[in-house]
Length: 331
Picture 1 (cartoon, rainbow, N blue to C red):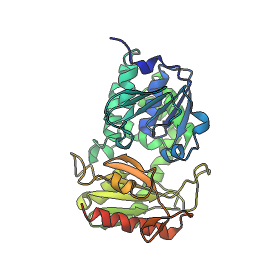
Picture 2: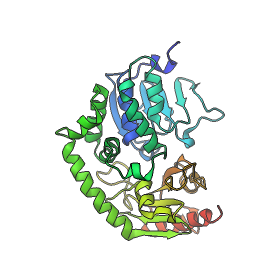
Picture 3: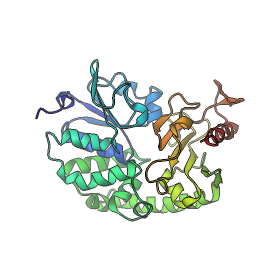
Picture 4: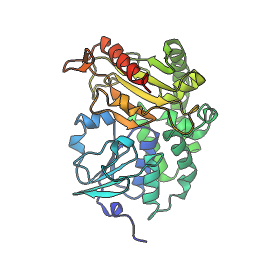
């Protein structure tokens, strides 16, 4: 069988998300393009043009919104699906590989697996699919499974993410990575940070109409939906987490624009959520999006429920939430 046309590209740089899915995707692609530079990005930063200088036709953009200048786009997010197609297609000089998989890493695994032996990553891939695709159980997420910890360690430090990516490219086991001199102290630090975050989530969680709302803006803390819905239990059908820094812009060290993330309580709704959360993520932010059950956007400046051009202030957060709650109430 002929290898996928994407594998014939001359990829010199891989721009990928800095979460578990993005890191594993990058590691798999590096097995085929071992000399490719890796750059970590955020969906909002890419859409804001902050990665324009590092993306060209020799760049693969993975687990992130499609960039018009890239040579290869690999993604699985619902909001990034090519119009009129749910499969691979060419768009001019760009090769687009979009598939409705649980993870972007699964696409890379299948592609690169056509030409390179990646069977050592098969067990890891099962967990990446579970964690990124909302298929993990509550007990699995709260466990000490090595891949769960790998996901906890990744994020917030591109140096750590790159170390893990290169280790996976070499074929190191997840257990060996977590026990390494560079990563073992991070595991301890993240464990302490997660304990503090859990306390904050409990303190700041409000459940309104079965939507768990947690405001963590200006606190230097992030949380994913798994953490919030695990703590909320069956009292919520979905959650809304506000994080980031009011008044911040992309590119500021240790700060990023105040944003909201939306997640279905996948522990309760195993077959998918009861509401398409991308409707909330795209209501005010033209760059918002993701999956129906996991997505996000930036908080927008509003005046009487209409987006306006000015800097975001604290009061805008409440206005955004009020509008989203009105939409949620119509589910």
